[in-house]
Every structure is written in structure tokens, then in C-alpha cells.
Image 1 (spheres, rainbow, N blue to C red):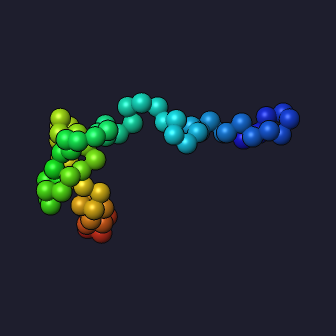
Image 2 (image 1 turned 90 degrees about the vertical axis):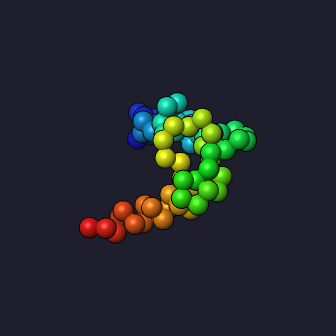
Length: 70
């Protein structure tokens, strides 16, 4: 989106790295990390995270399984 001078104003999107807080689950800054419920590998979530925690590999595989089931 451009203003009257033809300058790009960003079109209302957030700049990279400036997403509003509260989007998605919190990630841990350092250990201890929660274990993946499928393979028991460390995840990117803190141990205090409530709910199902999946490592990136298992999350990707789960997304593939649910996308192809039909």
C-alpha cells in the first residue's frame, strides 16, 4: 500500500519480528524444555507449558497425517 507520495506504508502488516504478544504458545529461552509426547525429544516449549508438546519433527509429521486424512 502506498501513501500519496508513492511511498510504501507496509499495507497494515507487522514488520518481521514485531508480531504482537500472545500469538501462539510461549517458547522457552533456555532449559529446562518440555519433552515431546511422542518421541520424548526436547521441544521448544518450557516444562511449565500446559497441553500437548510436540517437537518440530513430530509436529510436522502430525500435520502431514491430519492434512492427508480425509
